[in-house]
Image (cartoon, rainbow, N blue to C red; front, side, top):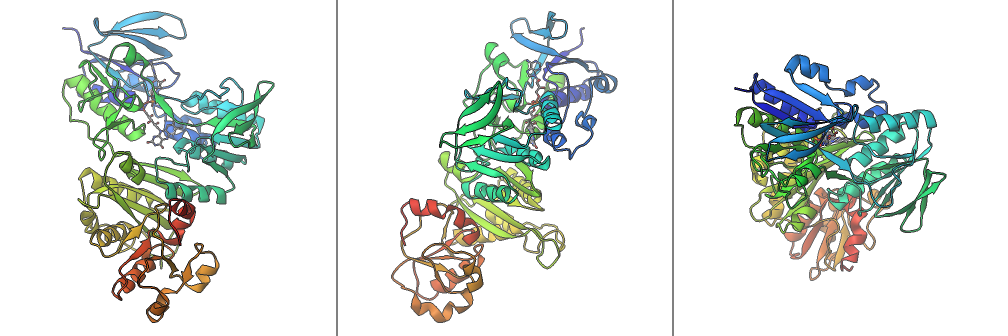
Length: 558
Ligand SMILES: Cc1cc2nc3c(=O)[nH]c(=O)nc-3n(C[C@H](O)[C@H](O)[C@H](O)COP(=O)(O)OP(=O)(O)OC[C@H]3O[C@@H](n4cnc5c(N)ncnc54)[C@H](O)[C@@H]3O)c2cc1C
């Protein structure tokens, strides 16, 4: 009997994982990877850091090679081979060898599609300009690095403030280039909520980046074939020696569409929990597919390396044996580093949860990433999103220096097990002063969420409307001198009890402090002193100052 033949389309994250797992599960199968590019199994996520020269040795980006795949796994890797068409009826693929120009047909028993995604190229782009770039693979990386090394640009415009845009901003700045970062949405990192994006922008600005959020690109200015500027819709023109476009990716679904495979509502190839497409002999993984979101409970496109690798492994096993564990839904846990800081999220943001019609609220815990008395504590903002009725955790976002990854990973694990805020409050986490706090920021966020849910305090989210009433800043006079919200009266917390007579019990009192903690204490004092309409500004001045204008615009008055 002929050996089972597995063909894999795409040889990087999802495809390489599928092929190697297939081999480990089935020694007798014939396994072929067709990869249209020059390389397989390279470290996409490391590419920016080779441009920035944090990674000096290019060879380190090549996690494996076709020879290693042949020697170790007896996998037949054919680079420069593009799969052009799937003939489902005859279970064949048509493949073009780009070097010889030859087209061949190859039979498969099982086909695994892992063709990834491609950068979105907008209408106004001038993709053929020698100083216009996107970043997806090693060829793009080499082009950008050679340009930076040889042409010595001094001004770059990065278009798109998502993960890749922010990474490229950082690495170009590390190469001594003045960077403007343009983002069409209100703030950078648009998957995160506005106040978190605003904080990321503050860090970028502190590091010299010219951030243009809420601005759209109208056109590129081109002279003699080269881009010299980026024209924004508001009339500004940003001078540019180079332009990096990072406005998102689109799934590579052409093969699947032409083969009549089902495409899901979010635009990715539809797969079931077994990673099978609408044709049971064809599996699909990675950026080209849509996956079940762990919290939203509906399929979404989540183009990240973790799901691609894990699902690739499962698809390889199923292709090789006919069986594999079901694919676990994905929480979209992600993180980006920039200028010594980190920001990331897991699960749903408030914005996405509301768009999905889910009931949700959020709290902020702001504090050191480890005990404040131990040297080196760095401030972190942790936002916890949850359902106020069921108390189920829906997501988290964090920005800080050290320890952002740890908090996100703990909460991602909690999401996996459908934890409530009460479960988080009781987590037994590792603690010594250099690593955390006896009451970790995760606990603090959970405690605040419990207090809010139990009616001990009413909070106003950044950007949400504020009731007309008295605005009270309970920070110290020294803090207030460095800035406060317009119209606020200052009564420091330690003098609040003896100054209650200065406040009108018949009108709402909106309190704030630095990060929310003293505001909460003040709210408890007022509530137990006959004030019935008391609100605390979540995240305090630290977070609300960036979005206060939005709160005012949404109909509040003081
Ligand atoms: C610069 C950069 C940084 C990133 N950083 C992170 C990060 O820090 N964290 C994170 O989680 N994710 C990150 N990602 C995303 C992550 O790399 C992707 O989610 C992941 O690689 C997707 O895996 P995939 O197998 O679906 O696609 P890919 O890894 O892109 O592989 C698809 C391959 O298929 C090939 N192919 C396509 N069509 C065909 C065809 N018809 N025939 C043959 N071959 C074909 C392509 O040439 C490509 O090599 C980053 C991506 C980039 C570009």
